[in-house]
Image (cartoon, rainbow over all chains, first blue to last red; front, side, top):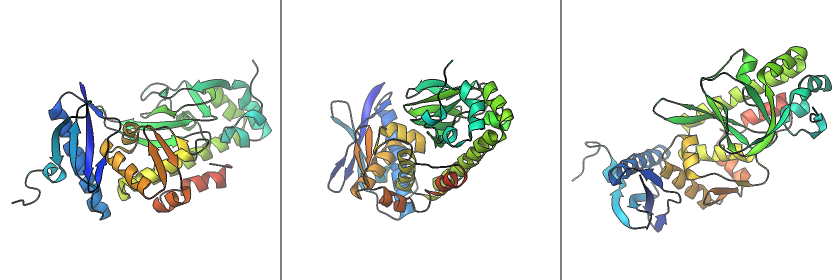
Length: 83
Length: 238
């Protein structure tokens, strides 16, 4: 298990993940980020307020960015038309 | 064994009952510390003790076999754990644990039942508390399906604020995410938003309530009714 941090990119900076999460590997951390992004988008849709964030930066404990996941890419396949 | 006098106890139920009711329960109260994380009632295991809190917060949690969890309710110095024994049950499917450390009294289930047989007014007061607790879980259900994550968080912070001394609450995002059954980043974002409105200050592992009235407005009617029910039926609260 390793500790991964899901920092959120917002319009004027970053919302930091203070605690991080334990995951077996980056694939598992990405899976968690996908579920989290869907929930943030769903909450934004329900409230009618645009989401604060646009993407997750998944980092390791040293703060190195391992992966960037745009929230829009977290939607289930076929959910919206993209081109 | 010496036991606490009624004027000394801070638990909201034990301090409002009449002298005869206290005489029935008081001799059976054992002072206990309630460290964070202590499991007071284990799901599916027979009740052994009920706990009357003087301080701290207890949490009643339901979970599936694959560890999906949600908090069903909270209580503090206004209530007690293990009240299923007052309703004729020997165990329950929920887990009760200490989420903010405190202290209180424990009483064996047998002694609590006997005390309730001796004193109808004790029994009635405790059952009124069960009624208030059911009101709380009803509002939690309403909030869970009708409110945004930030609205639910606001309500929940108010409920914790009622049960701590001062304006600081020690909670991690991970813990909040379990209690609200949302992903951790949803908690982080909701805290960021509520802090941006000036209602709270969030530091790592720590939340300070800054503007309680604004939080109540933000909770949009989901907070306050069970609390008013407690004041109406039992006594001072919060």
